[in-house]
Each structure stands twice: as C-alpha cells, then as structure tokens.
Image (tube, rainbow, N blue to C red; front, side, top):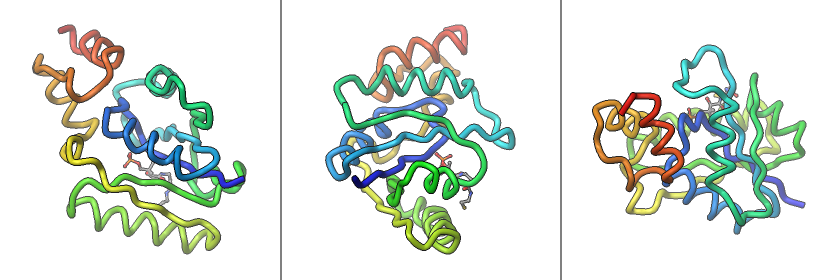
Length: 159
Ligand code: PNS
C-alpha cells in the first residue's frame, strides 16, 4: 500500500489545501494530512481545532486520515510507513522554499519522494495567512474556505 503524507500548518485549512488533498487521494492508496504541532511557529488555532476543521472539510474521502506531528517530518513519515510527501505549488515564489524542503527531506531519508501538485488556477493565490488577514479586517472569505472555517475565523476576530 502506497502511503503519502500531506504536511503543513493548516492554520486554518483553505479551499486550496482541500483541492490538493482530493487530488492526492486519487494518486495514492492512503493520504495522511499531517498537521505541524511545533511550538516555534505561532498558530492562530490550536492543533486540535485545526485537525477538526480539516476533518469537517473532508467528508467522503475514505482513504484520508488527519494526524498531528512534531519533530522532523521524515521521522513521522517513517513511523507511518509513508514514502511520498505531497506539497502544493502555487507560484514560482514557492519554488525555492519547496526545493529546500524536498532536498533536505530526501537527504535525511532517501526513500522519500516529494510530489508537487500545482494548485488549481482558482486557488493559486490563496494562503492561510492571506485568509486570516482578510478575515481580521472583516473581509469576505467565503470563496476561500469552507463555511465552518469561515465561522471559526469570524469568531476569532469578533466579526
Ligand atoms: O504549511 P507549511 O507551514 O508551509 O508547512 C511546512 C512544513 C510543516 C511542511 C515544514 O515546516 C515541516 O516539515 N516541518 C517539520 C520539521 C522538519 O521536518 N523540518 C525539516 C524539513 S526542512
């Protein structure tokens, strides 16, 4: 069984992430959405909230699991028997950072392969940070995130 990991902060999940997960689930037998639980990065939502928002966004995908991880991604991958890492690529600006991640992970764990999925055109500009910024000023984010995530963000920013 081919197991792939889709790692990220998901703070919070966006429609762009959901699109990548749906496509990754068609490519491999099992996808584990791995939510980074790392104290060094300050997140708006707790890891439990982020996991719940992801699970609530993925009804009907029977081969997708959602977990948190800390420490190195490749250690989590080894534990889960995963040999693929999925990452979304939005624009050229993502390329340098993503290459750094992919090469480092490959150097640490040669059996791992990173598969890049290009974001679909509709979501190619989306990021969790941009969504949070728009939400914090009371802007309309209904096109960017599922309605339950929109409600959570509005609650966070008292909108
Ligand atoms: O959505 P993000 O924040 O761009 O995801 C980044 C993530 C979680 C994939 C990356 O920070 C990560 O894998 N962190 C775990 C620590 C690790 O393994 N670092 C070494 C790879 S360079």
